[in-house]
Length: 128
Image (cartoon, rainbow, N blue to C red):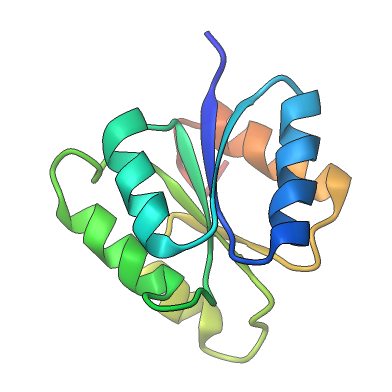
């Protein structure tokens, strides 16, 4: 079975880059340009993994993560934050919001594939 990965990213170039990398690696990709569409897709498609940008227009990625982790239907979907945040305390904020792991931007092809594969093989656990 092909794993489904939801990408919630407002930057069209970044979203397309991640989509192409993951599609070529054999994953089924569901793109969403904002939190609202990402939440709707998570509820309807039940992806195996969500890649969530933190800085989104309207509802940010942390609020969207808290919402998804608060619903029984989506609580079990692992969420990996995509972020350019590198300040002290950012990792703690991201994990406290319910993200299971995070990947720093800019996105690097090899690092993305390695992180996604390792994360999915570990069943959505960050300590893989």
